[in-house]
Length: 97
Image (cartoon, rainbow, N blue to C red; front, top):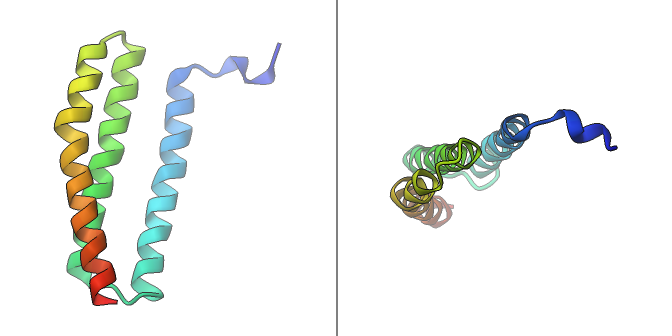
């Protein structure tokens, strides 16, 4: 048996959410320092990234609680606006660079 058998779905979720949060913060710092992105574009990117991370956490926890309809609705209602915000923020950040 594998040594990873002690982890349930929620521990794996929180581990990968931490990795995703760290990558998001590092990406925002890179945009600010290397590309000289403006603060409003970084604020929009932060809001979009946080919304996406929240939607993923909601969907995974809903599946773990055996509520697949809640998971699919969270991806439609929460994730799509997050994608729109992230796209707008990314375009604003790279346009100002």
